[in-house]
Image 1 (cartoon, rainbow, N blue to C red):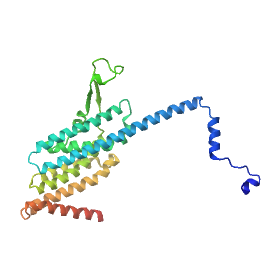
Image 2 (cartoon, rainbow, N blue to C red):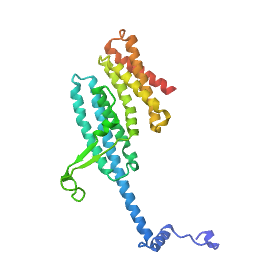
Image 3 (cartoon, rainbow, N blue to C red):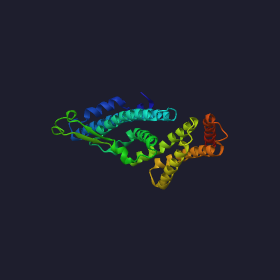
Image 4 (cartoon, rainbow, N blue to C red):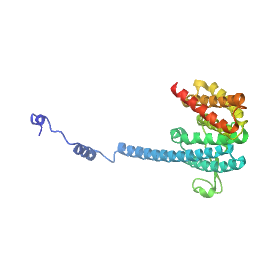
Length: 283
């Protein structure tokens, strides 16, 4: 017994004892407890769905990065179409995971779970836009991306209580404009790497094509400015860095291209890029 308890202060009740008294005093059959049981089930269901979407987003990110790494081989292989065909197969596998996301979001508010899968979708946009640029030298539109995200589920895969006999079920997933813009902003870094790699393999035309393309993307993002989403304005700085490095490579090719042997150009650009990164870090 402590001194305060001996002076007339009531003895403190142990936490476990108070908890037991509170639990035994609660009416488990009351409407309030029943309502909270329903809330508990709804939250558990939402959290489980959120975790499944996060896992699918990670799988999409991994496969999209593998596709991007594969596409970088186009600067060093004789048959570019073979690499693009292999990348098509990988992107089809990524779309299967996006289809699973569409199934999880059926009947749900997309914006409630958007943060769970947006990293994977941005990486997919980056991969598919990189693939499209290598093949067509243009920027893929948001409508073209969403057109490939319409999935048809066969009747035998659908419970009879949900669909009439013989009616296929259509699942759609729509990439949001914000995810599209963020994916395109990340694309600029991959184009900068492809530009440097192509020079090392003797391709003197790709850097100038990439430079013109990046200028157009930069102009488009400049029109958005600070009026767009916050994440887009953060990506604008990285976009300017990529454009600056590509323009520096084009300048070197124009001014000193005849002085430097082709097999040494990649080393020159790599060293200049490292110096630019160091200067930006000090600034």
